[in-house]
Every structure is written in structure tokens, then in C-alpha cells.
Image 1 (cartoon, one colour):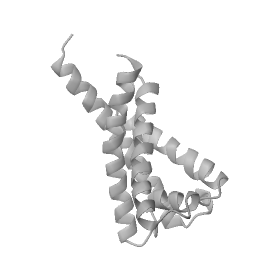
Image 2 (cartoon, rainbow, N blue to C red):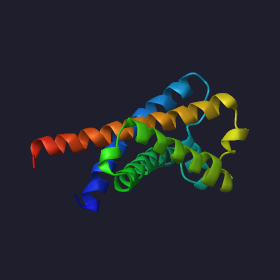
Image 3 (cartoon, rainbow, N blue to C red):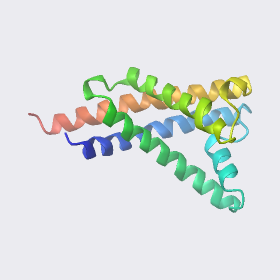
Image 4 (cartoon, one colour):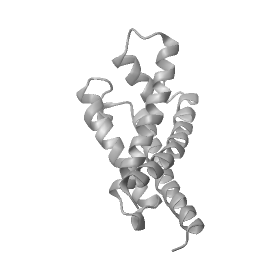
Length: 152
């Protein structure tokens, strides 16, 4: 299968994974563990003069776009036979590590995860594990569905 098709399938799996992750963020917000979800905090920091409604829309769009990009990357980097909830979960943890111990603190958007409030940091980490698990599951399901329609 071509790289473009793999990326498209991965991006589709990334949408499902982002939806699952957003559910975890929503629950953390409802419980008071997260005041502002990370995508909203990122947009508010990078675009302070944007109107509030614009910030909300951009936060949602960028979160879905980032999740789709992650899904595309996962599907292109990980051979299909290894695409499953296990490798997806590892991928989700790596995305979390790169963001919350890497580029987000480097850009002074969020504190490093090891310096953040424990409840908030744990929930953000769990949300990324859910993202990864769902990504691996969805990528495998999409491939299996395609193969069942087009047997060799």
C-alpha cells in the first residue's frame, strides 16, 4: 500500500483517537483537574489577540489536526503487522513526552509535566495513552476492514 493511502487511513484513525482523548480531557475538566484543556491553553498563548470564539474554534481545529497528523505519522512509521493498541499506546506516550517535556515547555506555553500539578499532569498523560490505544485499535480495524473488502 502506498504511503499516501497509509497516511490517509492513519489520519482517519487519528480522528477517532482524538475524539477519545477529548472525552478524557472533558472528564478531567468536569472534575476540576484541568481548568483549560491543553489545546485551548496553546491557542490562548500563541494567539492572545484572537477573539474568544476564534480561540475556541482554532483550539478544536488544531487539536483534531494534530491528532490526525499523529495518526498519519503512526501509520506511516509503524508497519501494519505491529499496528495495534499496544504500539499505539507507546506512540501516545511518546507524543505526550515530546509535547509535555519538550516543545510546550520550550515555548513557555505549559510547564514541564514533572513540574505541573500532579492531578493535571496525570490526566494529560492518561489522555495521551487513551489517544494511542484508540489510534492503534482504529488503524488495525480500518486495515482489516479494507482487506476484508479486497481479499488478495
